[in-house]
Image 1 (cartoon, helix red, strand yellow):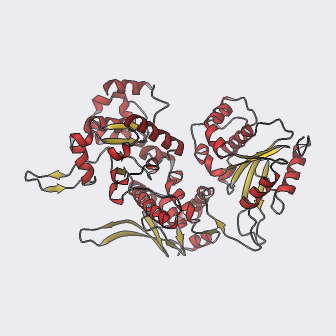
Image 2: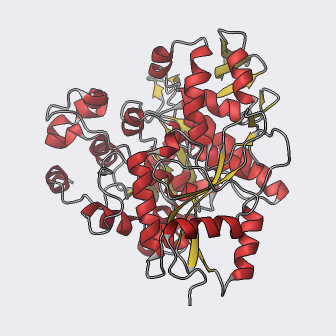
Image 3: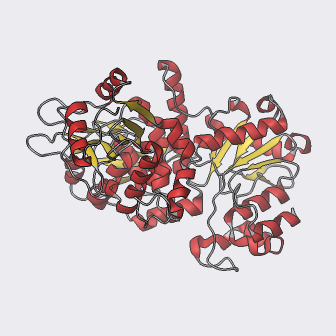
Length: 514
């Protein structure tokens, strides 16, 4: 028999709150979320309420806990309370017999989907959208969900709550930034801090600088000094340093951004949050910079995170094709690497190259390399297993592969590409051992001419191979494949970006040409 029997849902919530979460605030009502567990607010009311759990509640026992979680996620996608309130550490679901917990951060990518219809009734488990979301999240939820029977697993349940739900000490306390709430805090930072930074944001975007880089400089800092020296933007007490480079004399050049209000809003904002996050979250936050990038920029530049399951599966596909020792025998180039997460799990860093359009992403990868070195010293995990000299800024659709030389063989204009990679591409035998391993941008122009959206039709590659690509020229990823096919022949292409869309008409036509 279930511990709580067939009591009403409201009574069930009261009993679960009192018996499992004593000392916490379980009375808060957030939108249409059934049940919330929060840290009681400080007496002075200086901080936001900190949620630890948002849960779906069901009376009785005949409920699929997985479907209850999906219902809760649909509620979040439709009502979007996470845009207003600090998101919790866990999502959950419970009935009279059992309770389940799921880390909130595992569904961040799902909640950012713009092409999903969230405007359905979450409680209707028969809609196309509910079934679609259930299938999409099957592996994610099953891998992260922990379920406890109130009676059979009583000791384990108490242990879980005690070690994952912490009460603050009396008095005020700064909210600690973590992988669950850093995107929510960013939205508040945009409202409060961004307007006080003396910079032309429109011009900055054209130069590849976005607000998120200033935010990362803030959160990865202590006493207003950014701890990661390889980030593109650094906070230095009362100003930011950005666009740092070494000139021809070996001296460092940089630009400086000051505050318009003598840093007043910045100081007041960060008084509410504890910086930096715990060391174990640094690499995750830097690697998930894509979550802070505006949608239009993400599509044009490919600032998208490739899920770990896809990374592992794609590398298994390559191993099945090229053999178990392929990493020792082949070179790997991710020419739209973002912050480098597609390369996670590769072990031979001497054979790996990573390039990306944005200098900020290059700096993020180099910071992750530093994180990797630090992790090896203190036995923590994280970082990027890459050589810093193999990580470079490169516009794949516009920049030349090779150094430009005069008739005497003297270099008159250097390519951005490392010389070692130039040698591989120019050598027919080495080129056969080059794997182009990518999850490319997918921006699409507004019309068949490639005009309008994101300037998709403005690349040199689009103009050079327009007749070859046909209608496909309006797709950025098609331009990537076209340059690879024509200018790096005999390579191994590992492109997993369109696994579900290979039957698109323009792709079928393009494959005939390939």
